[in-house]
Amino acid sequence: MTRTTLHRAASFAVTVALCCSAAPAASHSVPGVSVAAIAGTGTSGSTDGPAASANFVTPAAVAAGPHDELYVADAGAQRIRIVSPNRTVRTLAGSAPLEFGGLWAAPGNVDGPGTTARFSEPEGIAVARDGTVYVADTGNKSIRRITPAGVVSTFATGFGAPRGIAIDDAGDLYVADAVLGLRKIASNGTVTSIPVPATRAYGVALLPQPFTIVLSDDHGFLVGPGGTSWYRIASDKTSGPPIQGDRHLGVPYLLAPIGPRAIVYTDPDTGTVRYLNVATFNTAVLEQGGQPLGIATTRTGAIVLSDAASRKIERISGFDARDVVDAAVDALPPRRPGTYRVLEIGNSFVWWNNTRVDSIAQQIARGIGPKADVVPVQMVGSELPAIVSYIEEYGELFDMVILHVDDGTIGNALLERGASAWHDPVLKSLRSLRESLEREHVGLLVVERPMPNMLGPAEGTAHNIRENALAAPNVTQKDAWDAVLRESGAHWTDLWPAYMRDIRSVRVEPIYAGDEHLTPHGRSVTAAAVLQALRPLLPARMR
Image (cartoon, rainbow, N blue to C red; front, side):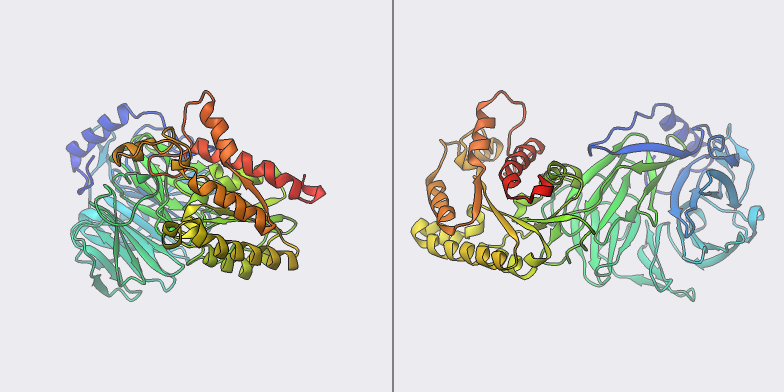
């Protein structure tokens, strides 16, 4: 099924029937993620009742209500359905006899109460705090409003092909239109166009900190902080910022916010549900299989999707959406009562192309025990004085600090001049940090990370081959680092021995990926080595 206006009548029905007959089993790239059906038998129909026996024709969009209900725009049945918290399905509005073997209902355009109303391919839906429902009635090129009692009215007209809808705190609507771009509807019904560098838009999500509009189109995403200026995140990596892991982003369709600066979205072209942090550009595939169209996040943070292939409403569980703290823009999360709090800080080595569950921080936390709270903080491109300044400002909020250092934290200007140039300023920074944390009774472990070129051609191989730079291990800086760390008086550990043991062993995966960041295996090796060095520094109750 393409993302243009849904096929009408028989052609629409045949497309859905074919796609649903061979839906692949779902698979997941994030450890611990699972998918379970909430409602729908998998057969096509419009039967209400218990969720396990109710069915849908083409659930094209889903939204979460204020009381944990799920609202479903069933585009093939021309109905708006509700899945209640007790797993009962009912029709809120719309009706029409099913045709073509139950695969399609004739469209219409009628306002009125409940089942007297008619829709034409409703493909987007959003629910306000008071329970008012807004529907992108795509075939009728309008936005419809449904009261909590089920009375349907036409709220705004003059659209091209409205799809995704989002509502801000003031009650204004933002509508992604596949013909006209992005439009805004004020609470009084006034429609305005928001200038964006795209004419076709499919999904829209609003992020709160700071207020940011995220829009999906044919080329990926447009991100608009404040809704006024825009930058592109290209799905094919041809433009925009670098995506962690150098990954493609698929073909985004509908979006939902998850956390202050991240979204989850559907990609029906590849049958995937994905995660993207629009500030750090971290991404993950949460599910693969079927034909996911609609997606929503509930007030408790659960992810819900509507799948046109399985004809079911599904819940994704087990995804920990906590991301790295970007020191440039993020506040630290509040301390959880009764925890031993650890700050893990450094450059992009701390967090790159991973999720919380397989991060270095979370592996260290699991190794310490259930009372450990390891907070990863990333300072991409920052040199040691800036990192030390951050720790000195916030270190008192923690019980322990893990500081990752490498050649990147020295800075290119000093690094190019050699160890004689950077030895003293680096030593001064580390000593200052140690003394500052000692006054606050906060522990410190400095972790020395070898760069890929220190480990020989077995690491960073893809990068080195492209750059014609295969070479023997370069340990020029290592001895200098060892000397500085010894003189600093801080507790420190060197990852080089652990990495070399792994390189010399029989293994399947390298430590470093082609972009010179850690692989999942590399993160595991790193976390184990750090944890071993950290244990003697922990209080007896945490060992």
